[in-house]
Length: 112
Image (cartoon, rainbow, N blue to C red; front, top):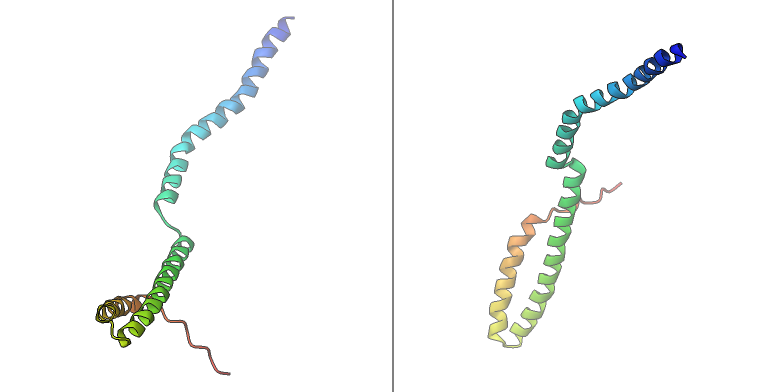
């Protein structure tokens, strides 16, 4: 009986020491993990930047396509004698001219 009274706290203390050590390690490394998470949130990976750039280029290409259709319609109306549509065609063309340099060119296919 006396041995079990001494053995039980000793065994409990030894088994809990692993839990305490684990907790101390968790507490000690928490600021490092938190700083790493903040760094992940604050930075943008190259992959994320590439995807965002691709989305932006597609939006510009879509806008250019819309402008080209509007410009073609405005030009046809202008040739039919509609002065207002002639002015609109000039404005559309100016927007197109500003947008075109922001869209990268596709590489030319190589001839074998």
